[in-house]
Image 1 (tube, rainbow, N blue to C red):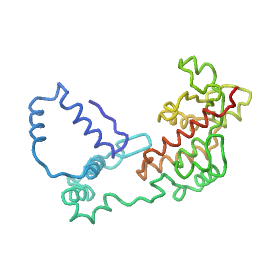
Image 2 (image 1 turned 45 degrees about the vertical axis):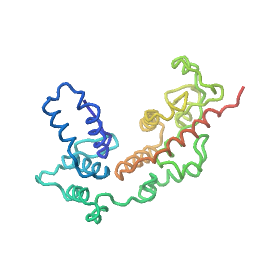
Image 3 (image 1 turned 135 degrees about the horizontal axis):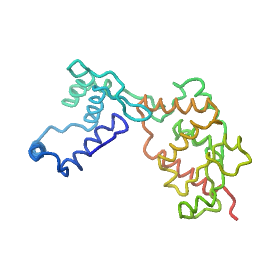
Image 4 (image 1 turned 60 degrees about the horizontal axis):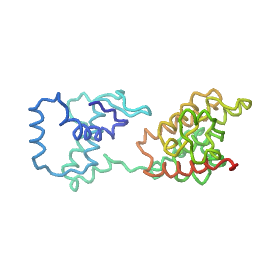
Length: 281
């Protein structure tokens, strides 16, 4: 019965999921409301393109003060207290009612996005420090991230994985998860390169991560753990932390998402490189 959309553009999906899975099943919703709902559902309405409905819900959220942040939606924007819909909300309703006659409002609601921004490339609008970090990463080939990966990878993910080097998984990783990967003998983990340089005498430390299959590597919580480590690690250079933070912020501010499939393709490449890193015995 509770939903936590990650951003305002996802409010529509949360409402739709509530409608499809919870409304009918909830024992606490009065029967008269369910009867009225079913009656409304049987009525015939003019079909409205889903992108306008999604835009309406997102803008309605902004009207009450919701705003997007790297950590999700918060109440932080000034709410519309005028008692009237904003200009943008009125435009959404108008174009949804008659897309042809109101075509001139399309750009107000869906402003054209720079192709570079669509690909989550932010060097042209980022600070000088972030531009230098991205440029330096492009020039350096690491064991797991190559310059050839850059065109199809977001700047944030490219810089993030650039900060990690190989490390042998300990047997404790096997014992704890009770699974043995097919390529255990050749598999490498990911180690924070700054922790590795600061603690060369330590075989294992908190800056090491050991996904044992592609699914674990692809999980969003795994990349989040890598990011949290870099941002809290005392050995990570300040300019790296600053660049990662800015690249993530720019992704939220511009409202762009990773293109479907691009992350998966990179993760498959990364897993192949990790799984075959060490020579077979």
